Length: 132
Image 1 (cartoon, helix red, strand yellow):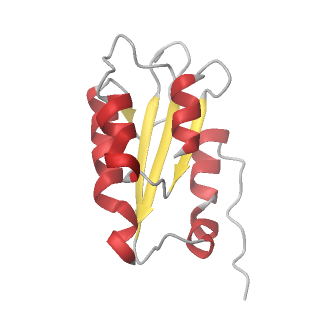
Image 2 (cartoon, one colour):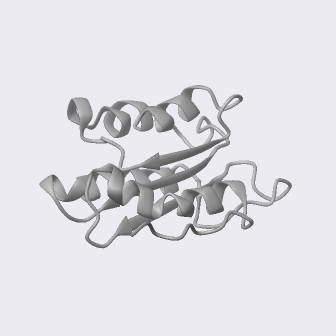
Image 3 (tube, one colour):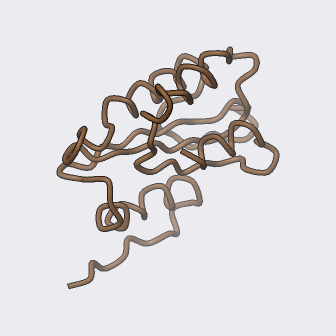
């Protein structure tokens, strides 16, 4: 959640945000219902976003809340799922991923960390070999 808020409020510092398993439920879904609700396509910052969750465990790792944030970001003009060409997209992109069986803990974040790394930092990031 902090990554999303930092990029939203300081896009000149954080032009990309990897929001993994964010606690979008916090404070009555404040990020969605206050921060994003006040925005318009004209005021949304130029940032590339990655939001994800699992689909298991307590509250399914906030899968529904994460999907609502992803949908709102698309309404604000972020292109779904592709890296923007700097000259072609001043707004930015947003990716959404749900890890089947994923829960809100370090084991599952570690299993999928390579995804936002690759999407936000480039294709040269390699998928790690799982630890036994």
